[in-house]
Image (cartoon, rainbow, N blue to C red; front, top):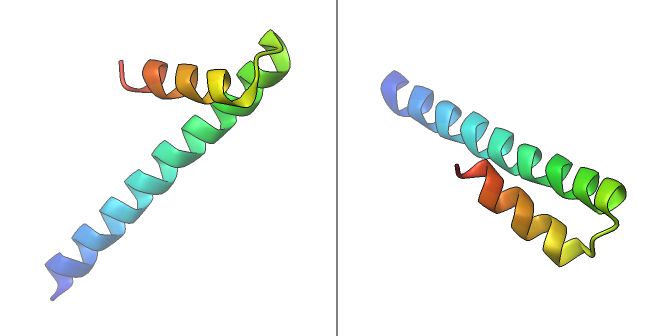
Length: 50
């Protein structure tokens, strides 16, 4: 039971971190590069996965 809770917590933290990283990157690229939201989101996702 503890192992399942630990795994669930680790997955939740990892997913939250990834989505936050992409969201912050999207906002930064939108502001700095004057790209639209779709371009900023795409660039954030592509560069996050490298």
